[in-house]
Image 1 (spheres, rainbow, N blue to C red):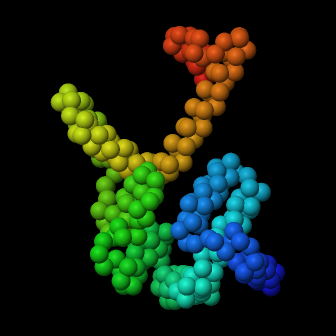
Image 2 (cartoon, one colour):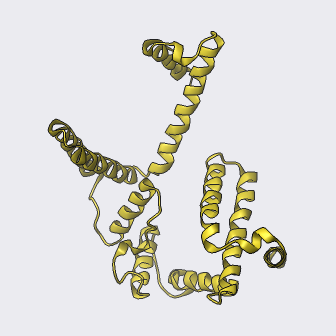
Image 3 (cartoon, rainbow, N blue to C red):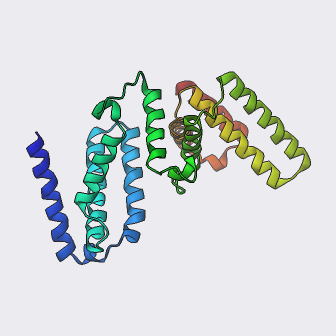
Length: 258
């Protein structure tokens, strides 16, 4: 199995070398031109994961691996790092950060593994400025908020229970209503953001991925809205031909079915 994996990996590396030498398009690419395509490939993988499409997941993983090899090829050309450096670097990091597997450290649960991981990062000098240094700036806001809260938890800055978190949600809702009374748009935006941040905190206590939960709601809404459009079309109508009351009646009918 190991030999098969190595052979397949080296085959892809060879193909990348050939494309970089012979293909005009591949020759033109830089780390900057690849950036947006890499982000797109990642989201395509996420779509396949959400759909639990294993064939699609396999294909999108291949695309991402290609991008990793592509960046490594460019890094080598620029004399910054090699593919070997990349592979050895992640292997050494994993060994270093799993002393309970590759050393004599004992852990009792997942939480202790995370605490040790954080402590090792501090020892590596990764956390000299802030615990949030490792949170990518370009993450979507909901994912970023979750990561920020998880980081804060790792150093003990955490709510004691979900009841207190929900009290904070209620408090933030009250502050939003007060901001609305003052008709201060900047304040309204800030308080709305606070509500979202608090709800994401609550989602963590419910052991729910807020990004995934919201995406499921998005897909549910799209499915129901398409059904509503189909019902209207079956009657020879467009949604723009209907009143809000009529659309609401069809919406409620669709909800009962879905």
